[in-house]
Image (cartoon, rainbow, N blue to C red; front, side, top):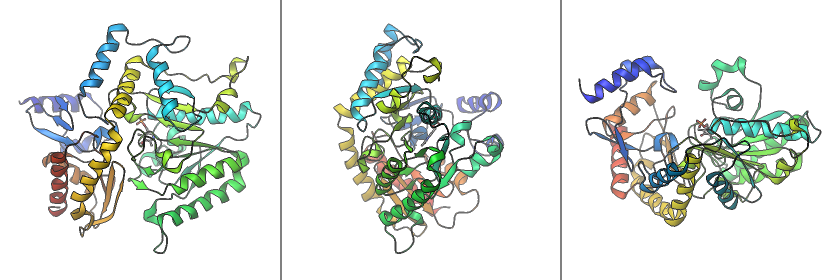
Length: 437
Ligand SMILES: *Cc1c(COP(=O)(O)O)cnc(C)c1O
């Protein structure tokens, strides 16, 4: 048996893969990876696949990045991990200080979690606990956008609106309120994305007028609702949401887990609306796709509401690996590279090349709603048959590209190190895949 076949067989016997109906692997190939470099994943027989979705959006600066590798080796020379309750270390301190300098103003307190969902749990609990500590325990509800995604643990799933992930577990979930998404695809023929954003903010206003007294926070994915099909909206919505949250005394939680660290063209998506949330959730690209780590950044006002002699007024939440030094060092290396290599400036050029090359896709008869924000591209496929996504994924792999459609939406969000020749390879593959369906 070949190296690939053996690995596949062992995996299917012992590993329960995420987000997968395992029976589908009777026909869908599982891809064994033996090494990875830059935008490429290599199997055990040397065949390579272009990682056009940054391994579920986490890999910012390519696989096997020498500078991140070096930072991790260096950290291993001193220590690997220590608990963050009662103890502290330079990687966590430096990362907190750096993030506070880079993030929208006023988010000076970093609380570390293990992954995206745990960051969302932290933000929801902190928001509720803030209102409780300030004498308003009835403010316990959460408002979300239609089609939003915030992770799949029970608390995070309760503010997620993707029926496929949510409906089965609905009886386990606490109810949250849902307001219309400013997704510009839903705008009427006479509406600009900005006008549509304005109308959606009107619906949020109407909701808060009635329910602010029972509402702790609004949680949103700024600029792009990623898991919900790369739905993009005008930054104006964020400005209006910020104003409404201020007016009705409701927290604004910005879930930038997928869009943080340059994905939308600015370091943080909130910058494009010139707003600061009360809580900023970060994960995914934070460590460049190396290690699980998340952080919730909170304002001083929130922090002060927990600062007290009484134990139970503190935020008694923990994860064993909170602030793991290796993960923090990877994150610091990512911030160094983004800064030293002027990566966001370079991305403007990469995006321009993509958009030039993708003109043929934009006008393709099967392509609807071609869209781009920063380093995210997506389009919806007209006339997609049932099972389109899985079939497209399989055919893309055969063409040497990792693309994993969300329903009928094809998207790509590659690592920022993608070269022109690799962009050409990807766009050529996309064109062929649309023709040969
Ligand atoms: C991926 C994601 C999460 C969940 O992160 P995990 O690390 O998968 O738990 C939460 N919110 C958004 C916007 C995401 O894209």
